[in-house]
Length: 268
Image (cartoon, rainbow, N blue to C red; front, side, top):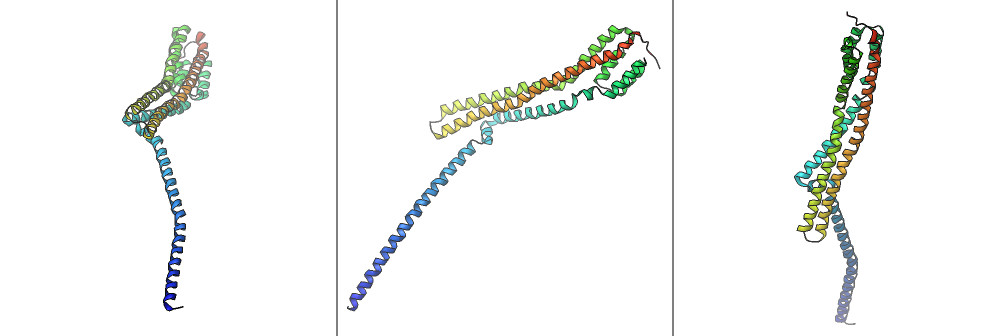
């Protein structure tokens, strides 16, 4: 074989080897490119899902209501905090052992059994409270007769009952105000929803905004009910509790001073 033929054969083998290598590289690169496209599609889908979740987040729903929406949610939060504080306060203050101390009742009973009204009044001055006020009203009318004592005790019991129910009444205010705020937020959300239908063209953006508006309406309704239901339940509970305690104090006072029918006042 001549030298030219060998050079030509080597050149043809080199060209063939180069072509085979290029084909192999292209075949390997094609699946990699397809995988890259799939990864890009997955990333885009994940980004879209994340954007949709962010759009439907509670913060976004609150802020989408504008200034009025933020004010509504702050008002609902204030109602919830006030209701919780009033419930805790009522649990602490409206207790029979706190309003009608056993030690105080024992001291007054001993004084009345001795017929010493002035001593009993002194105990009332030393330990002021609802029961002390009712007893003092009765003791102050000893010389007027037992009927006058009963009338004075009844009036004093009504006054003390009103004092006990003053804070409890605010629970009723919370129970009535919170649903109204929730309803106002519902109306605002529905107004925004219909405005979205009327101003935006049909599509994914319109559907997303419409969902946000409806979610805002439902969230405010739920927030109002969450604040109102416990407040209303505890209002009736503490009102009945305070009424029961007041009636017990009135009966106890009449029981303590019934001995005054035939007892003279002892002056010190």
